[in-house]
Image (cartoon, rainbow, N blue to C red; front, side):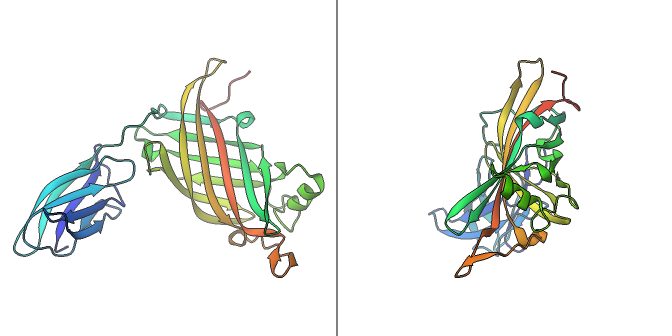
Length: 273
């Protein structure tokens, strides 16, 4: 890297991939810009020699501004830049296992219907756990959904969705997601990359996660709440039902929205109530 370089990290020393380094002249003109890689390293192209302003920003973190000295070769270094998290109104949950409470959790899938409306299907049979790490970004988890628990409120339609033309629940009874970590995108917002197994296919997806907080419940336990969502394409999972009703308009759209409202109980098993 021949311009201004920086190693961008959290206060705990973890690299901040995707952080943006912007360099401006002292009169406010932008001179260079770079995005940090997976190791947190960022470097601009060669810059004019002199004193400039460098600003480092990243979602969920407070920006940092420094004066940067650039040599006659166009290069300079900020060294290690540490970003503090934005103030969050909600404390992250304590480290350890958290178990999904299926009674207070559900998944909703929304698809376009006939090109003019939406159809929603709800899955109520959800199980799994979240393993919260001391460093919250290292948190992992998994969830399993029983495909046959789909419910649109119309029995004939539900039977069709369970059939081989859609979910084929006899062959593929479970829908599973395994999350491999968290990336902060806002004060109480995160993304969780992972692998979704659906209809016999495994694909990498990323959930947009909103954390709702944690606290005591009436039964002597502690609970935490999360909402997660993502967009999926049916054909990515070999669900290629293509009924057309008119002029190329599909009966059911190919893009579906997945919403998960999850409530978890602290511990590795659900309490007896």
